[in-house]
Image 1 (cartoon, rainbow, N blue to C red):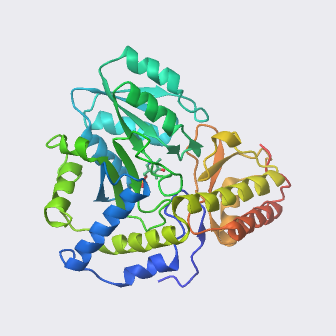
Image 2 (cartoon, rainbow, N blue to C red):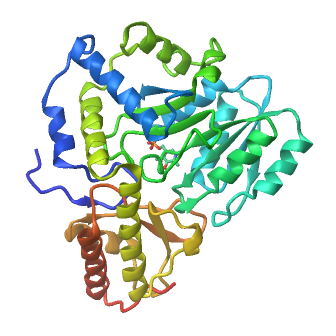
Length: 372
Ligand SMILES: *Cc1c(COP(=O)(O)O)cnc(C)c1O
């Protein structure tokens, strides 16, 4: 086992976690034991309460990473005979379209540039023009670029046209407030290891109870069937197949940390401060973010690739790593760029430390500016 201290993860997940979260995994749970059944029930209720969905939605956790939960939600809820409209402005939207095609759910897309949110008015027109569209799928924060898409306006438009809405809120849930009492959403998809600051391994879907009840027998898959997964929880409180026992205990502890921080509002405030320190500090080094500040979610920042011919991303990555910071070693955007996350158990002093490390890194590379 490596005795080296953990680096700070300034990535889009997995993230730096709290000691208490990791410590919760020191206990073993029997998957069919009363203690674990109680833990499962508690976590299911807590995640629904975060979005104020107690009266309308049920929490269905699923083994696997976020993409498993996305595929499960699409497979369980979408109709094989009616059309789905996927709003795309990045890699995660494209992945949703790909899943729909793979599992035989007819779909269209409304695609905008990576730095352009979908326009609710145009969406409304498209829905009125095509009554065969039953559902719309939106990525809340498109982690490809870090853009925050206009969830409330989209949800209002979709509801006004009488269609369903599925939201991939993977990188926003727990940090950006979502209120299911006011925002009509059929299914909200999240995961344990992003803004909830748990460890990886659990997808979480908050589904409208009515919609889930009407979805029996639709899923293309046995293990990804959210309706069956939910029936299992309702029948005996247990997971259908081997649950991520340690991961669920860690998530429960991570939710304690979220409460202690003042809930979603408190976490949002810390991430926003992290993001502002990052933006200001990197601007002082000449770096330019891809997005206008009004579109930027306080989750992850994409910077345009520096123009200095001596800049090599691999070297920059290694120099930062030597100084204790891991960033994401690859770009997802169409434009040349690199990304730095501001989520997880990191705070102002860590972000200031990152900016100082970036300054030292480029000095070591013989570069004076990160300007694109
Ligand atoms: C992280 C993420 C996912 C899921 O990715 P996994 O690697 O499967 O956990 C899906 N959508 C968005 C927007 C994400 O940020």
